[in-house]
Image (cartoon, rainbow, N blue to C red; front, top):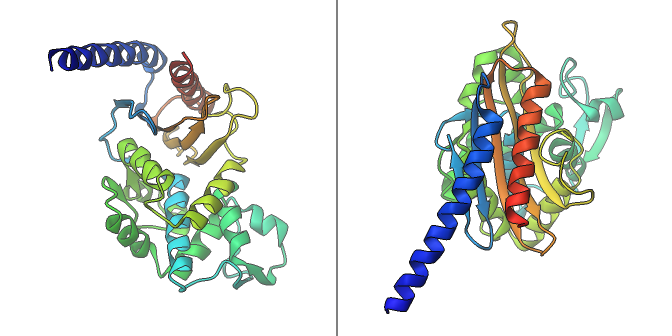
Length: 292
């Protein structure tokens, strides 16, 4: 019994020393920055945890498209929606003045695009019109909230769609998550506790194909590292404030293990380049920590 207790103490001391070293490196990245930076890291196999400002309710921006996509796939599993069903694209749902590769692909609309394509554009390319089309099919943001509540996801709130966020800067703060919540939901997703294996594999594949935010979490990682991720960004308001520059991800290590990471840069007066560099630098030190 004494040996077990001693081993536990040694492991605890080693884990604390590792966390302290990571803490020092992260502090050097974020110090003197005019921003709130929320960070959570969770080793999916070894249970390693690192948190900084992880219980602050920070605006998600497009990170919430992960949660929306999961709710859509839950509806697919229940037979309420089908990935093959056709969605009509026209002027009413292909809004101008918003980020929409879907609209760029179908500038004149389309009589029927499969829901799978809408979902893939929404997650992998962060399409705002696709996001709101999916929310309409779900019956609104409250459906996503109920789904996340039912899965025990805490510290998450969704109230408004993309169109509403475009009309009112302050609305984004009503769509919030704690970074702790973000890594917890990614663990539930990874463990198959959010969706069926088929849906999990499908959404994971879509997230692995994400093409937005190449200057954030993946920038300094080795080329071809599998990173299943979702980005989010608010841009700046007239006062030069960035509401959100975010990313969440499941990273696969060379040894086949994984970790979840969420970095939310909020209420920042720094430049876009500085905000993204913080996320990139944090990602690199976390990667180095896991690859010692």
